[in-house]
Amino acid sequence: MKLQYKTQGFTIDEKALSVISEDGTTRALRPKTCQLLIILLKNSGQVVTKQQLLDAVWASSVVDEQVIFQSIKEIRQLFQDHDVIKTLPKQGYIWLPNVKTSHVISSVIGPPYMRFVVVLLIVTAFSLNYFWFSSAPNTSFNSDIAGSVVILPTVNNIEGNDHSWVRLGMMDQVIQRLPNHDKFGILQTDYVLEVLARANVPLQNIKPHHVGDIFQVSGAELLVSTKLSGTPHDYQLSYTFYYRKAQTKGVLFSTDPQLLIDKLVKELNLALGVSDDSNHGYYHSDFSDEMLGVAIDLRLENNHLAAKELLEVIVLKDPNNLTAQRLFIETLLNLQQLAEATQQLAIALPLAQQQQDHSELTRLLYFQAINLIQNNSPTEAYGVIARAFKLAESYHDWLFMAYLTDLKAYLATQAQQFSKAEAYYHRAMHYHRVLKCPVGESSTWVRLGLLAKQQNNVEKQTFAFEQAKSIATQRELHQQVELIEQIGFK
Image 1 (cartoon, helix red, strand yellow):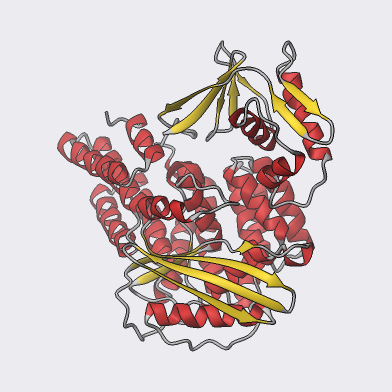
Image 2: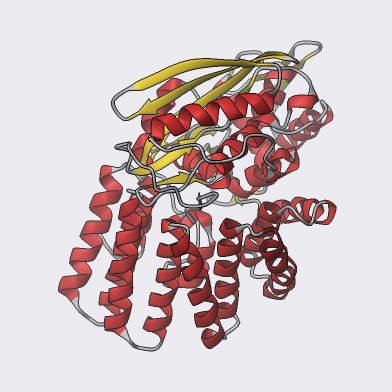
């Protein structure tokens, strides 16, 4: 379900960030401007201060009040025949007209599923589930954790730009420090943000009551929430480990944020039942660049053009930032700019090999395979898939083992090798189940249904779509349910 606002003949969709006029025409409005409009609508008749707007809409960016003035101007231009916003000097803004709200089923945004490869590239369709498995495999395992571990963004309560890196940077350093295993997986930083969006959880203000929503839409068995407080050289990091039926809390103290990360990782390793074999100290985090967080926010808003511009700046400034390189390449593929994607892959792949970053190398090879498929080079794609799969398998990268197997199934389907394709999909299903990922499992059932449909096997088709919809419905994946219905199952 999603919330819509109706005022002055317009319908404003909170989730899609769209404005639709009475005749059904979608009116152009920037995502941030639409977010600001929604805040005014939510507080209709009440004063909303400039600081409230900055905190809610631009919390992850360093901006001045001019961005508010520009957005207010755009809104007034949209409602040009009406006096909709009253400015109160030194106080803020008030939305004047009446506002009606309603809950509706989420709409699906994206191309038809039959354009299989393109859909794989679009996160909002079935969500490219990026998990991060760092360092070497760890053979010590005493925990009953079997599924996914989610490290949430760190809440930063320390003022000043010196700590702007904390929200994603501290989170990502913790993820890098955690061991991988054949029974659980650590979600990668950018995918955590996608999970939060899927659960309709505000990225800037995660509360304890959101925990249930995150559990519901993910395969998580453990959620880790952290908050940094205190003053420089006198830090405290409070944490909560949320399990499905219990929780553990604690507070860590140090004069150095890096030492706090060491201490938190030690506590997490104890909770996971693994030994901490890593060296303590500073771990480079690509997400320490706050601009990367802004770029990810733009991608979550489906503003790929703006994300591309920002990511291009980041990779030019810091070409060794493999996360930015990979997100830049994925964005180019989303925009169907294949020639540019090919050029950027030629830059990023050698960097990943030099840095011996097995996780990013696997992901880059995956996108290279997709790029080759879209450029009608299936033979070359097979070789890249085989190389990437071998690497993913050696590091228990279950999610990308699943996605690479999906690509094998697609190529087998294109070659009319239907039995082989079906076997590949069932193998991919196994990999998704290791991580208890409902989106991945449901998506694979959809692909099996489409494969059966292509062979005119109504019985298998019906069964597969029923399985897909059942999983999506049970886990309240509303967008997934609609997409399943959209592609042929009612």
